[in-house]
Amino acid sequence: MTDFDTLFLNANLATFCGEGYGEIRDGALAIANGKIVWLGPRNALPSGWAASTDKIIDAKGGWITPGLIDCHTHLVYGSNRAAEWEMRLEGASYEEIARAGGGIRSTVSATRAADERVLLSQAWSRAQALASEGVTTVEIKSGYGLDTDSEARMLRVARRIGDSGQLAVRTTFLGAHALPAEFAGRADDYIDHLCQHMLPAIAAEGLADAVDAFCETIGFSPAQTERVFQRAQELNLPVKLHAEQLSNQGGAALVARFQGLSADHIEWLDEAGIAAMKRAGTVAVLLPGAFYCLRETKVPPIDALRAAGVPMAVATDHNPGTAPLLSLRLAMNMACTLFRLTPAEALAGATRHAAAALGLNDRGRLEVGLRADLCVWQVERPAELIYQIGGQPLRMRYLEGRQL
Ligand code: NIG
Ligand code: FE
Image 1: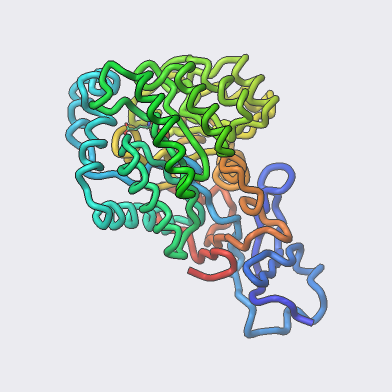
Image 2: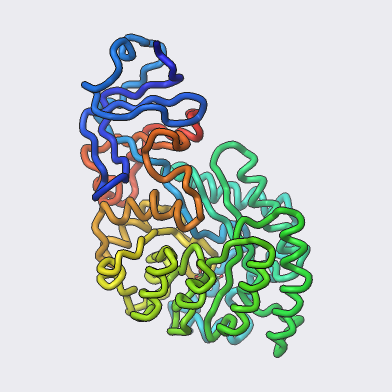
């Protein structure tokens, strides 16, 4: 009996179950109806399976990993901020530019002015760039609209990228990203408005899978962030947070108090935050692309996170300001080079732990019963796909059992 649609042979598997890569050398993996139905060493394959030649794919001694998951991006926005980058190269800081009305707020003006078709075509080509390197699930945040209509437009664009069937999309409402100009000097009023009108409207349309905020001196205070989280909780939406990126605000402990999915950036995270994250099962999302682009020097407390057993994810944080980065492979390379993750940790961070950072239990590992989202790589060892900067080691990409 051959109850499968596709059977990979001559493959090494990095399952991310158990320790390290969770390797199975000379393995086989079978897919049926979009799910993984069997995997293991080739010599344990049920007899007769290897004879169904029309369903067999020869992985040519390469490696199969779960499809990569980019669990933190801002893919939808108008225009770009190359001019601001030039200013920063000449010495202006990210905070100075933000305080002078540039930064996030300049992208807000461009995003509000852009029509939905333009936003979609630009975001679509960014999503394709990520997918071409093995991403099968991407999280996309709003946060450059900052009014109900523009935020909804961004999230609809994000959903349409998912409707393409080329990669799965999870959306996050980030209305508390920056203070829009029309609320200048009235941050609490904006948070009231967000809680009373924006978030309920977004939730009613089913546009958000989670809620995020930017808790920072140039963003929102912990008290304001907490009000957003309370409202999200009332609407049954899980929360995550841009926390301790530029300073220690206690954001990680705050998001953990709400059983948050993740605390992201966390360069300034302290022991109390780590302990709170561990207790709550909150994932640490590392964003080395933003660290690199901002020329930060304070590295997230990797050793302490590792010692505490807090799962660490790695994402691109693609955005026009602090990380115009469209390569999750390069983000993993940076996580190793700049933050000293091991390659196995970095890859687990873009698969298994990235799934957890999105609250998804049906992907991110190679395991019977999970979605058949996978990548076949022409590499001799998994580290090679992080070690090499550029190039194209990806041979095949599968989303729910369909080759793309
Ligand atoms: O994740 N920290 C806040 N949000 C983004 C930056 C957004 C922007 O500068 O446009 C980030 O780094
Ligand atoms: Fe971000």
